Length: 411
Ligand code: UDP
Image (cartoon, rainbow, N blue to C red):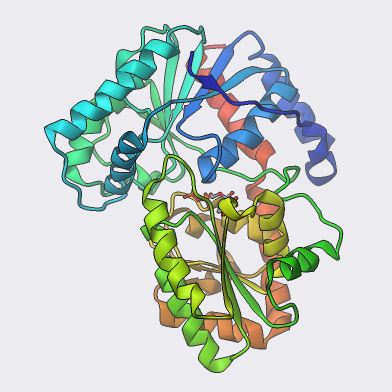
């Protein structure tokens, strides 16, 4: 059987003070109808990136609601994952070159994974993202199959889309984050469910007030000087080079500003290692620039601390499926200057749109404005927190997922 990810324990009750008893009871009632179903969620990595973050919060909460839910991951070597990273980039619109050899390599590995999958029994299988997408065609499991896309597929590279489309169309339903992300010619039922964050995990839990600054100080950041932060995978669509350029522009106005880049290195993202090396080179020659990763012990607690302790969060994505980090930072009442891309637009509506940007110059201008106007930093931060509380917390996500599963499974 495919490797199972340990889910730990969570309690839905933690949300009671935030959303009220009625909404918790409603969730329990929806969940009670699904108790006989066995659900399986599959993706390609247990850590690193938004999908792993989402599943590690969502699945323990489902179990707490009495639902039988497991999380398993597909296996593959770095060659396989460099192929699937290429698929990921291609589906987001990058030009790629797909050869017969690449297709064979991908399908060969998926067939091996499908054999392992068939050793278990589930009623509903939810496959996340392109890496395991073709499993549906090779597994013999009699289940309802759902495909969950976390990326913007509005204008995919045609070669990759023509290759994957026949597999994706074998699913009963495909879930997207936004209507705009659905490829025009996808001929199966679709549903829209935006992701959400969990306020109880180490990444988002409240911290004692002294801790963020203490952790930052411990990492070498100069406390008392302004801090600009981006937390993201080292990925071309997250535009880390644009962030560095933005920081250099800000520095012309505010010479003491510091830049902290925090990135995870996940095993399903070999491209990140190369980019990390290049970015690190930039940091070596700049005493106000810091690059941290999970390889240097910067985990969820540190990310939480950096998000709380920094002055302005930047998320300069050029393409973005959702961008959990945006909600994570807004939840901590931080102003976020972010690329006008995909799911970020969903999170930063109304007044928060003021902080959406289309260029490094614009990003630098907004950051300088905020750093020079602390009152505005607080105002945007407070607005952001309210927006996340209303739309982007786990209970809303659980409700929408369970309602859809209930419909698809006919219970
Ligand atoms: N993340 C992290 N450490 C890092 C970089 C990212 O824990 O060094 C987390 C981040 O806090 C967020 C997730 O990884 O929870 C990234 O999800 P997002 O939706 O922002 O982007 P994705 O990586 O899925 O494109």
